[in-house]
Image 1 (cartoon, rainbow, N blue to C red):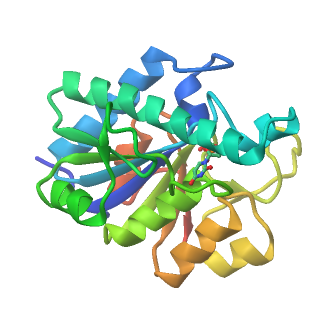
Image 2 (image 1 turned 90 degrees about the vertical axis):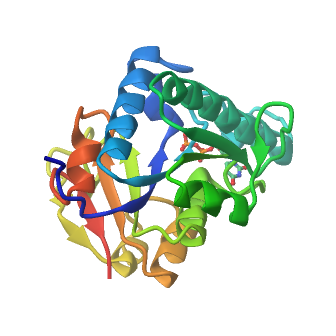
Length: 239
Ligand code: UDP
């Protein structure tokens, strides 16, 4: 029997870092394959999935700018990194027989389609997995903001943020032994306490469009499906 989905139409944000696995850079194919397996499993139980993939495993604009490169150029490089990650994930999904499309806000017509809201909505309605590359398509933004934007545009029930930690903590759990993990928070609490969930622009957009944000560890095998079914270890940001 298929498990009951708590969230049927979701935007899954996968950070570039999550694709690195234990490596310091780039894509770990074992991690890529496992994430693709879980997305395929989610599709098989009836979930409609949009994916926004980060690029931090290759390039972050702010980091590049700190090294002396123009910030806008650095951000363009970062957006191109998200295209690379989407192509890799698309390939892994296609190998599993999942019907998926890469659509990019930063146009790279030789390798993928260009994002349009209408086209992407049609893909999602037809049950295809849509990989949103290029973040928002603009410098000075992040893929978290891109994820909140696409979640709103695609009419998603929830924005699932898959990271390397299993929720939102009061402090960095790797550094502070007294850090506590939250089960539930409101968007407003995240903003007021400046909690490290997503950047403020992304949280504000989710809040204004009443989209719950669920933070969970994509490194934990099976966690994505658990979260889709309304279970599992996660922090829910809502209301
Ligand atoms: N980026 C951008 N505009 C966007 C999304 C991303 O300029 O709308 C650039 C930015 O330089 C960012 C990089 O792409 O540092 C990679 O994205 P992000 O840092 O969000 O990736 P993640 O941390 O999720 O791996």
